[in-house]
Image 1 (cartoon, rainbow, N blue to C red):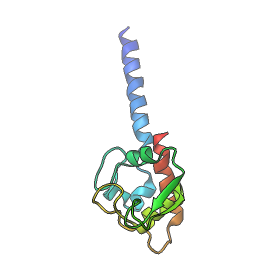
Image 2: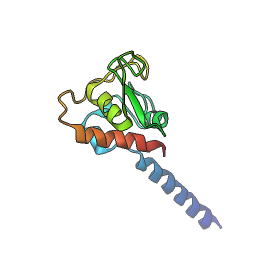
Image 3: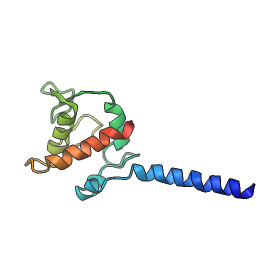
Length: 125
C-alpha cells in the first residue's frame, strides 16, 4: 500500500513539474530580453503574459496607439498585427503607468515578434 501511495505522489509531482515546464519562457523571449519586464505568471515591470493572454482570449481586434488603446488616435487592427505593433513600437496606457518600450522600431524582427505574440495569446487556452 505504501508503494502505491509513493508511486502516486511521484506521478503527481511529475505532472505538476511537467505543467510548469510547459509554460516556461521560450528561448526567443530570453534572447530578446522580454524577461527583463515580463514573466509568465506574475507582474514584473510589465504584466504577466498569462494576464495578457486572458485579457485578449476570444478577441479578434486590437486598438493600437502609442498613447494607449483608448487614445483618440487609436486605430483598430487584427489582434496579432495590433499586438505586434505594440511590441515593436512600444506604447503605454494599457496596463498602468509603465510604458512598453519599443523592441523593433526598425521592423527587422517581425517574425520573432509574431512568434512571441502567438505564444502569449496561446497561454490561456
